[in-house]
Image 1 (cartoon, rainbow, N blue to C red):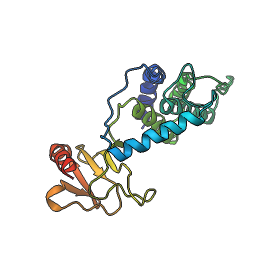
Image 2 (image 1 turned 30 degrees about the vertical axis):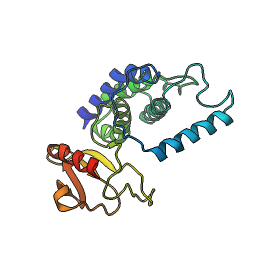
Image 3 (image 1 turned 90 degrees about the horizontal axis):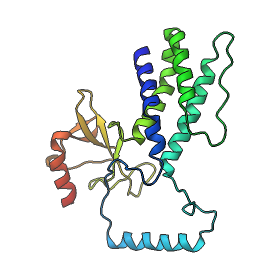
Amino acid sequence: MRHIVVQNLEWVIEYWPDLVESRLPMTTKPLRQAREINGEEKELLDAQARMDRYFRTHLAWGESPAPVDVDILQTLLDVLVLADDLAAELGPPAMCPILAPPGPGVLDARPWLRYSLARLHELPDDWCEWAWPTVERIYRRTAGALAEIYHGQTVRVICPWCKGRTAEQPTGGAHTWRVEVLPNNEIAIVCHGINCSPPADKVGTWLWGKPCWPITTWQRLAHHARAA
């Protein structure tokens, strides 16, 4: 456990500058999947854009002279809060004050991550077990934003069989396909939609009652999705 916690913290510290840089709109981003929209969806998006321009003021999102990627910025702030909480919970060593909380405008979580890393090297193993959930959240948020992690990524396709129905979106339209690492370390797409039941000839296998397509069947899955 100590090895995993230390390794994940060191990884986030190493790649933090890349995450900060990726918030800028001109930064090259990892390729993301996108689906083509139909005519009706395009008309709705155009109408929404016209309304946004009509009601927008100089204080609205999109009018900043230095726009940023809002998703990346939110990740930076979330990780910074987690790093500060972790450093505060680990406590100061003898005769050494704890790090002050980050101030407004701070986007560098590395001082708090390095502080936690140093404390975990000093503390017993059970502290590493306690810190693991927070460190794992920090690692996954950072790696996910940098597209450096496969497990849990959303495939931006509407499932043709459950139509994207979830508990949050019972009428459909949600992206229910997730890339997951199976127990045998094989990568697969799993649909998490409600009552998703593809025909037997169109599903790769089943995982805990959910349709599952191992990576070797992805070409056939793409063909079925396009046909649907």
